[in-house]
Length: 391
Image 1 (cartoon, rainbow, N blue to C red):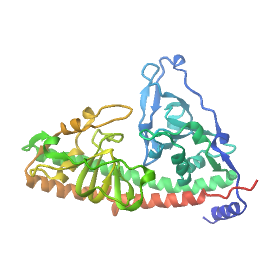
Image 2 (tube, rainbow, N blue to C red):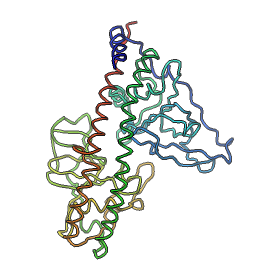
Image 3 (tube, rainbow, N blue to C red):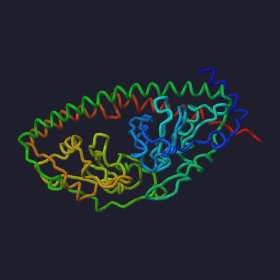
Image 4 (tube, one colour):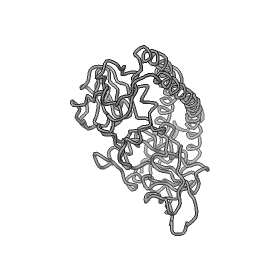
């Protein structure tokens, strides 16, 4: 660590040049599908990027006939992808050899580094910094469907230290991300085991249960909700929930109690088709992107419903493709089983223990991953902060 400390100290004292990203990247070609008849490509859509790992996870095979209109950009190994649609969802990835010369959506800004000036991994770490996202938030446009243009992304001024300094910074930061990836892989394996056991257990207790519609036993308690823009929020002690869980902490609350939150639009379903769920207890605020549910029938435990719904494929109840939505009518029609209360209590008792091991942020692998991520973010923002060289 001494060598990089010396580098950073030296260049912080004298400063480094800052340049717009546009001057550090090359032009990216678009595919001409009329010349590609009969050829198959892997399509990298916005949903292809794992936001947690910042990697391309799943792609779709396309050709000249099946390619969507947004499938235009030919990417190369070493390209940096940044999602410009709903950019604060932070969809970014570094293109590996496995996706060399494949096709990316126009929903990405494809940044192809001029390697004589900037290293791909250095640029990749730069677009993850707090400073970059402050810039993105200030320059995105649109309220319900925010986006930032490619030209705005490329106008961002970034530090450009010498390549040897970049290599040292990349070496340090890549060590953090590689360790986190190993922990994430282990956690994913455990989560798959848990999901298999959860489904098996719920199937067993459902044999003699009564099947009803979700709306018959759970009530959508959302009449108090109203949107609060980021600019209007004031920081405070109360969690502010969206479809994907806690988004912020604010100084007011709308709900006081225990509720099950289900994604209403945007983030509606997981990769396996199960709904996006959150568990909220105490005083909190919920925005308009999540249904707020509580039990209206004493025969069902809300916590059992939480575990049960994670085994259900809701894709047939979701409308829209560009902007998926699970409206209240369709949500109410989802089938749910009511086993005996003793059976529900047993399921909750057993699955809550697994839930803590695979999702709890205070213990186990999730806590270790969170600690490593915070450590990475601390060093990333510290190592990538330079004084601008006086002109």
